[in-house]
Length: 69
Image 1 (tube, rainbow, N blue to C red):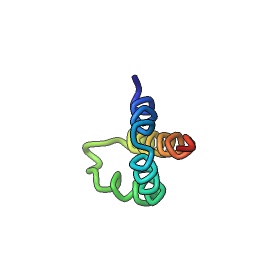
Image 2: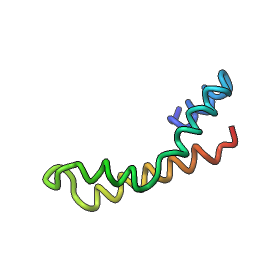
Image 3: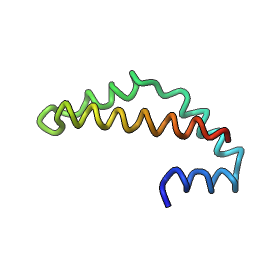
């Protein structure tokens, strides 16, 4: 079961909680994520890994927000 599947299942059990979490998720901007990744020292993460991680979070955010919960 993927994490998305788990969220979908959990949202069936408590739709109000799911909506609350999704509402909070809408408040996270690309800039917020970039600030976090920028705090990782360059000797701990490559530019490619940084871009990949940021893109993964962006795509997963969109997937969750498009669920229509």
